[in-house]
Image (cartoon, rainbow, N blue to C red; front, side):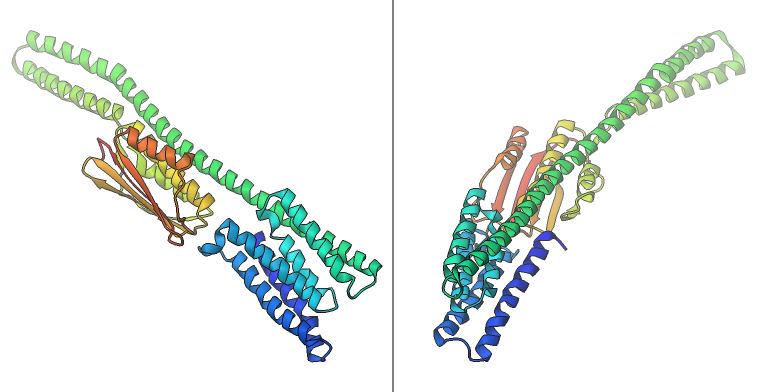
Length: 374
C-alpha cells in the first residue's frame, strides 16, 4: 500500500476514534443539547470534507481553491467538535488536517498549524486550567508538525519519483534509438565489408572469366561462359544485399513497445501494426519523442491508471491516437512538452491536436506524413 493510502486510512481511523468518547458522553447524558447539535453537525462534516480530499477520481474537488476550502472546513469542524465537548479527543482531527497541508506553500502551512494550535489553546481554557490548556496546545502542536513533516516528505518523495520516472522514460527512448542506431551501423559495416571484399573479388573473377572465355574453345569454353554468367549473377546478388543493408529502415514499432514495456506506474495498451518500419530516421525519431512525451505527461499529470496508444497507417502517413482514463482538464494549458510535440509534427508537415474534459481523461491525436512506411 502506498504512503498516501496509509495516511488516508490513518486519517479516517483518527476521525472515527475521536468521536467515540463523545458518543459515550451523549449516551450517558453528560452532554448539553447545544453541544450535541454542534457535534452532530461538525463530525459528519469533517468526514465528508476529508473524504472529498482523498478521492482519486476526477472531479471539481481537485481544483486548488476547492481543496483549500475543504481544508478550512475540516479545521473549522475539528475546532467546533473540540469546543462542543469538554475533552481533547476531537483535537486529533486537527492533526489529520495538518497531514494534508503539504498541498499549500510551506510558510502558509506553518502559519496554519500555529493558528490551529492557538485556537486549540484558547478552547482548552474553557474546560482546563491554564497550565493544562498550554500543555494540550503544545502537545497537539507537536503532533501537527510531525504529521505535516511526514506528509511533506511523502510529497517530496512522490515528486522525486515522478522526476525519476520521467528520466527513466527518456533513458528508455534514448536506449531504443541507440539500439536501432547500433543495428544500422552494424548493417552498414557488413555492407561495406561485402562491397570491399567479396564484391571486388567477384568483379576480378568476372573479368578473368571473361578473358578466359575468349581464349578457350570447345567444351571448355562453354563451361567458362556458364561460370562467367553465374559470377555476374552472384555479383548482382551481392550488390542487392549491400543496397538493402545500407537502406535498412528504423523499426519504430519495436522502439515504442520498448518504451511501454518498462512502464511500471501505468498500464499501457498498444495497438501498433507489426512491422512498423520507417526509412526516414528523422521522422521516426520525432515520432518516438512524441510517444515518450505522451507517456511522461500521463504518468506525471493525469492521475490515470491506463493509457491507450493506437498507431495506424493512412496512405503515406501515420496516425497516432492516445488517450488516458485520468482526471482530465477543463482547459488545456500548452506547456513545454505539448508545445514541443506540436512543433515537431508541424515541422515535418503534420499536425497534432489535444482534447480533454473534466473527468474524461486527456486525448492526443496526430498525423505525420512519412514516406517509406512498411
